[in-house]
Amino acid sequence: MAKELIFKLSGTDYSAAPVKLERKKIYGWSDIVATDRNGEVCSSA
Image 1 (cartoon, helix red, strand yellow):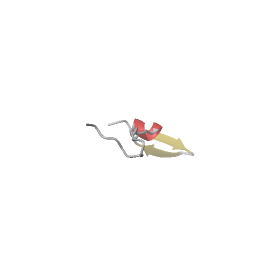
Image 2 (cartoon, one colour):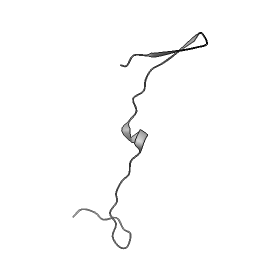
Image 3 (cartoon, one colour):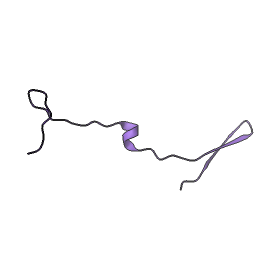
Image 4 (spheres, helix red, strand yellow):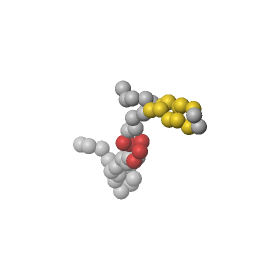
């Protein structure tokens, strides 16, 4: 577990725990979908 962070503002202490971020949430992602000429999704044979 990560160490708790403590912030001091105007004499008051605020604490917070770091949260792990997933790469997908930061940068986003895309899915590639192969379609035929009619626009229908292709499947593996």
